Length: 455
Image (cartoon, rainbow, N blue to C red; front, side, top):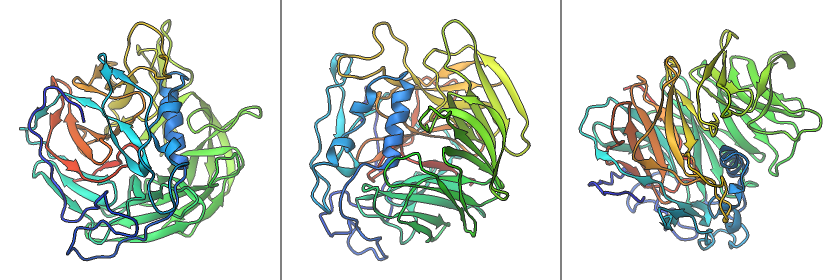
């Protein structure tokens, strides 16, 4: 990661971790550490979830050409040998303050542009405890500066935890995805001291959705992006529901699913369309909720914009309570670049953190196809105040992992550095983020998944 100035930084490695330099057929486990390793997969191909992330980033810069530059994973998939990540692929030149933007090798033979960070060492007690996904699931205690991997869970260098959602009794569910979208996706149930497989699918598992009651639904899609029906699989079971064609799930509460539908002439989109309810038990569509151009879900709340924010009018944020169905709307003065995609809500629903394109004069897309860099911003939903996190600049090709702490008093930002992920903390009033000196020494397929847990 590039940062200026460079305060002292410490690497805290767990007792078990995957060595990203392991060769073909090697597990990468630290010598002498016991425990099974999930089998290494062969082949490389573009993952559907990475395609979705590319589309998300492109949407965040207002429909620009950024998708052409989202890491090297897109080009890398054509150059690999079976079982081996291909050599890193050169990226188009992205400039930062007149200099080439710093890069580092990433997952699946790709390259990643690095976040630029100016931070202060953490000297405050935070009470923050997290789970972080990489090639294991790690429990992180920020104040103790401890990182503990889940015993027996170490993935190969071609498999990654890409999503974490809360389960019951303090546990979680982890989505495991490979570089090769035609290989098997898995869902693991993760406890404090163990993990076990609850779903393995030859179809691609795109996302997990917590039902708000300790259970999870997994969305299975075709290996190749199509508009075919999505299958929802209930975990730990036993329900399996095939959704109507054209319906894309965005949230689940109990047996009610909220999804996006597209008009007849529109292609299905993961981030825009008409929001509708769907009864998973009765298998029928309910009423329409509203039209969405961007949305986010968290803390039992769905928040969306009906149309893109403009310079000439206030931006209306619509809310839908997943448990009660209650709706409300409030207008905010927000930058024209504001989209809710990639945002997270605090537990008390009072704050919304999201990536926000920087404001600058000149063309929105440069000659290389890049849009503006990103900030991380926090919108205070009660007051309308918008704070940009100072000291952090994200490249226009990357989204951070975001979560609020379990008490909601700290924003945790997980930064993908290619071969590792760094955690930083921020709350309103701080002149810069705080660096607790913790890195997860794993490859990350995309934005590092982070989940706040209680102490």
